[in-house]
Length: 405
Image 1 (cartoon, rainbow, N blue to C red):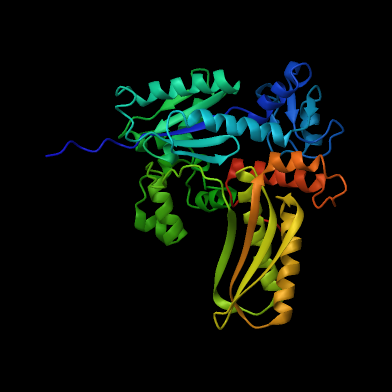
Image 2 (image 1 turned 30 degrees about the horizontal axis):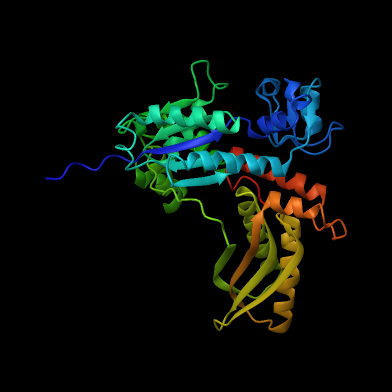
């Protein structure tokens, strides 16, 4: 008989108050000296908080909060802007360090990365995964000057929750690494509220509370058929597995995207232009969020319609500069869809928004220094609004905020 397959070895690396750390490194004499630091918005109170120093969070300041409100809660705070270029450079530097330990590194956002160390036991002398995680943490700090917290477990859900527990500001005993041993996933999950589980947003929490469910322990006695009856097959099954620490989502290695798309096949063909615009708005919103999550901008926007007779039609426009915000992407996509609908106004089976000619946001920012004459497609308000939406989604899940029509 062959030896049993070792359990997966998954890490999540989460940069602690990433934008605050970067701001302090960029301006050590200014932001670097401010204990009560807010990144995002302006000193006059416009905009929203992208990130707050841990000392400021003790006053109730949170990411996604209007800067004006944050300053009322913490009037002594210093407010600085955030450099997209500097943040992108640091993010890539962290990924570069992580790839020294394993080629399977998946950036989930600019400040969160997943690593799959499965099969590397011999490479690291069969040491405990926690020991490897601590070495990675020290190396990231030494080579990038960024402090990270690391969660370790057998899947990405457990690793993410463990990384949250590892943050030194959360609990006095936290020291930057928390590892959940194989077989202890369910016991670990039982220590959380349902709202702590990624994907359980405010609306889902309201539904759960109608049945008296606030914590994982509240929910564990209810079997899968009961949860499916209450919340539907998909949500009930998903919840049943998550509260037991089960997650089969793979870790995918980093690759530079050539294009990114969102599409929807309708249960019934759509012929109403207002209904199609609402769908287009939702798809544009999701595509823009995905783009920013990876630190990219895109120049080419493409809309595809599949008509009732299965004929595919496309319209594209390449912009003079890369963009990443919902308003610009939707405005351009809406014009393209109107052109397609005008040429052939018959019911649609599928609608798609695709973004291509993708580059890093910092590259686009650098090119813009030599292109002052180009039209400003995105405004500062667009970018601040996008940052606010991203902050809320990071905290409450991807479905926490939807754009209105």
